[in-house]
Image (tube, rainbow, N blue to C red; front, side, top):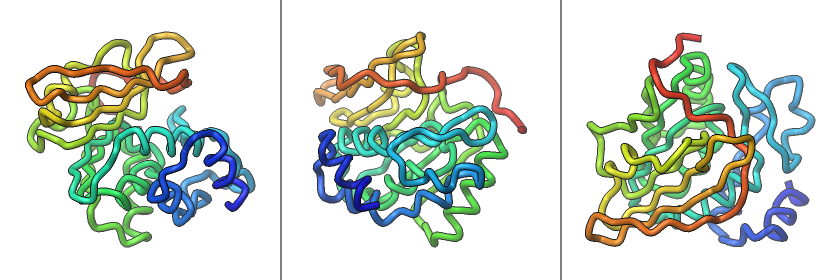
Length: 207
């Protein structure tokens, strides 16, 4: 873990609260048995349903880019293993997380319960539609690649909110941060190139 934290610092993840959240989150419990010995490598690892647990550097970078505040209400699109969700839960008031694969959601919910997380609210459904009933949100994080600007999700942000998402249709996407201007508009920044599984439209999967 110490080597991992040093690696994250050297790559630009320098916010103390983010590093502490990563350091105090046991990544091995989110990792399939086959890959547990690699849990503290700075690399993405496969999980069920053809998805991945993100590289710690990307988790740190995206979390830092959100500029979380202790009272933030956060929407996460793509619960996956629940690793990123857990990091967010340590830095914000409430995390609403949506997952389209029931198998992944059940496993993540079991991890949240085991860790005693009480500020995570889960939903089984199509993340591309967000969570309109709970909007607006202070922050939104998308952990799958949207093909273009995620307008449906941006509409669920508060006027001064921040959304971080990988954007693009190819194997390499652009990680972008959208920051509200307080008047209904957004400024977009390209942060770095990333590789994420695609954000799929349509019905959730009972897998």
